[in-house]
Length: 610
Image 1 (tube, rainbow, N blue to C red):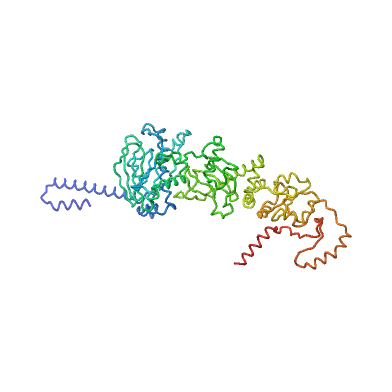
Image 2: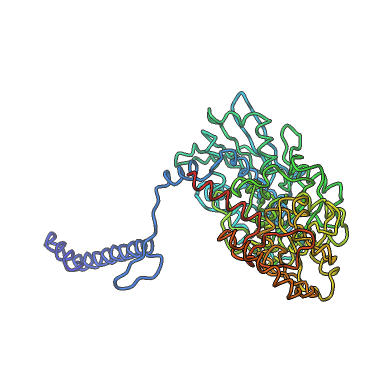
């Protein structure tokens, strides 16, 4: 290429001297060299953009592309289920800004302006202008930060902040501990669900910063201009849509704050009135929480639907292998939804770093503990991007196992130390707790110790445990005897109990339908087998042998009865179990009990009707 260009110059200037020709030739070579170098540099830059990763002879790596406006539209219109969560997201951002300011004020004092006034979040409503304003005196943003953090979808300034100051945040100094909420970098855009335009006026607490105003209508672009703030912090102004004017009313805004952000660690004010609780009781040391505080908090989260005070409390926090805090209560009375199908029943309130994620989460406790109310707060949970649902994973299972263990342990302690209080708990929730024996194989022995039953020797409504039964039985008695039936009055009339009364042997009276599954799932307790008095052969050890003469005399009667009943029964035999009654029906070993047979019959009838 350089040779051709040199030849052209020589051809068009035949009168030039040799020196001129030589000079032109040299200039032409330099020009061509510069152009070639520039093209190579441009080619390298293009290649770098196309191939940020490695290349091979037959493979080239490319970056994904996205239509920003469509992605932003998806984030705004499709990510969240409820539009009201915009307020949760903006308050969480403000809380993070305040926590960052607190942290930098301690860890980077030389480079930041000292925070003025009490850290807090202020909300202002202007019905005439249809605006909602959220303001904090936190860390603020520089012009570059506003562009990168607000103008880049899924860019988490919080994540970047934590990475930048990782060494400092690992310090054991609790004053420097960060409790930042942000994670995905999309929460801010929830504002466009309710706003036609969003203005962000901010001033960074970094020394030498200038105020900046960021403005966008959420249509794919934004403007940045000089701001008006004179003190560090951020003011977010939402110009509300026509169909979102409800968020200009104080009662509506306050209700959303109470629902999602009641326990954010900084005060939230509307017209100078603090509207949130701030103090998260579950994050307070157990020894510092009074019974009265537990009572008030219980009423706060249950709204009095299940009594005025808890019968049992579990205040638990752990950092490994999973970090979470929990405050659980056994209510005073059963909720109306106790036997409603699982998807419709009330569960625990789930928080992530003090912010409500799910008002009713039923995956953190097994179904047989569904009567428990309370809160769980964890930084380790895997949430979906909208932070409205919980992803099922190993962490959830670990939390469930820990909570279950602690609840059963506390119930066991109450059963041992305060029998009267435990009896109250059992009468309210025993029917549900029994389900655990058939669904939680790992904890079935622990649950069995918590079970209570009436017994033949006990008075009506007087309860006994399996442990008490085992300790009271004769040494040579190898079984725990029981009988199923719809009520105590019904089973007490059973002829099957005659021999047990005669020999002073106690029998558990199982009168709940669920008891059928209890005995099937348990089988034995403390080495003693659970055995029904109405099933199979009865061997009480010291029964007298029947006289052979009597056997001969009654053989004819047995044959006659067998012939009369035909295939209605499988066998007619003489028995020592009756002392007053002439005869009774006995089920085969392993046959379902009367309650289960009745349930199965009803199910068959319903199936036939369909």
